Image 1: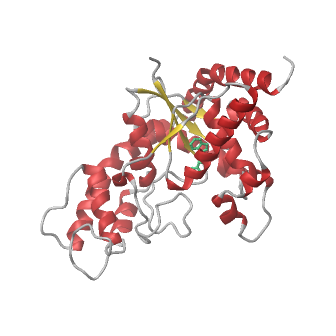
Image 2: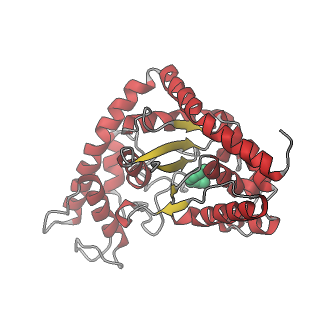
Image 3: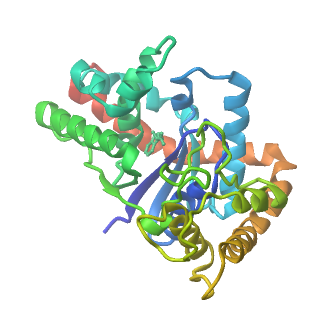
Length: 322
Ligand code: TRP
């Protein structure tokens, strides 16, 4: 049986953080032995909202470098910059011809993001179709997705099924894999929301490249509560998050009994133990960006034949002359 193909996507709109490491990068690294993984840096997706060209470029390179520093092995897991494989955009267009305007405009994320003030890019509306192209392009079996991307994965399946039904078997249907709850890292300053790349203040985010003193300060300032009890409890989201982070980083439960101050020191130590080697490796790799770019070029070259075959099949099925 062919190995399971797994596609993990990252959007270069911010610095990778602890939530990305525990929720996406570590599972990706763990899956390297048993599946054929692709790590996709979705730079085209970073153009759907107001963006700074130099920042998108810098973040794309930084994310690739962080992935390598964290242990992604490019020999087993191609690291692919979406814009390097032009088949993404070609399949995107072909899939747009199999997607309803209503379907796209009903996406919750589109509705939320387009409700903000200011001009809305057309690509924000069609972004889930580009994501469908990312997934279907590589005959993907598994896509690790958080809650927020679930609807986009469902749309991907809908489009694929419709296309297969109307034009003949062309796409493999992908399934989602959900990271465990321990992999869900909440914002330290606002434990009701997930730690995100672009949360407003960044006060509750642990960047993977943050210096040690910043990590300690962020943990020390983490929101707790008045209960003075170190336990997982729905009324104590901040403390629950700290306990989960400790478990996620070190596999340990807090020493018992501890004060919130002691818990925070333990959490900061556990995070630091995890980040210190990544930071060191990053510094080495970042010294030689040409090497990282070479790895990206090789990643694209590795997956391009799969992408080209899918596009060929799709073109033929939908009615284009070869
Ligand atoms: N849309 C995803 C996000 O915002 C990133 C992404 C782009 C992705 N293409 C993908 C995720 C393909 C999984 C598969 O986080």
